[in-house]
Length: 261
Ligand code: PEP
Image (cartoon, rainbow, N blue to C red; front, side, top):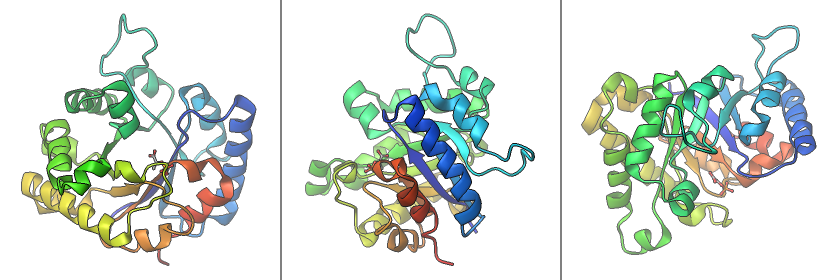
């Protein structure tokens, strides 16, 4: 069976106090209300709150009791040096960050992140033992033109298929149709399943059946407490990358509890 994962992408939200309140609430309530302990919960706050997120992520007296894992939203493609404002994978690793989102459509669209940069970021993360959560997905006009497979195929090929099989098997993929992100327009379970199955098939062609079988593929794009259940019930959807709904403990915990029992 594949891992079940729900990751929250806070984006550029929350002041220090708001972040502390939400992390505190999440830790307490995940401890009490998470119904399926096999669901891996990941929280990706802004960099500034990583240390606090780490301090609150587990039981004070028993660090093996982990409520959520800590991730971040981006990483530098460089290892160190004159890159003002950037944060390296080695720095993240030294702060015990375990996961990092790469290739989010907002980074691609507003910061011009290319597939080649995605490939370099993934490489940096893997070298530093951080699991990349790599986003792919088509724009509305790609889908209207029937080009979704072409676009996603290119993102996979140029961003990820240069990896050796062992490295590729350490990834989490997130399918995030750009037209669904922050728009309130969730893909239907059937639309999402079609793409997830296709991505898994591409992975199988490149890396073989076993790797394709174990790679988690998350859905992202206006996923909420109402839509998560039907999405997560699809055979190739292994959980969600959640934006807006991860900013509220009620919504996020309801999503964590949306897998079939
Ligand atoms: C995201 O940005 O990764 C995302 C899925 O956002 P939202 O859930 O708000 O659409």
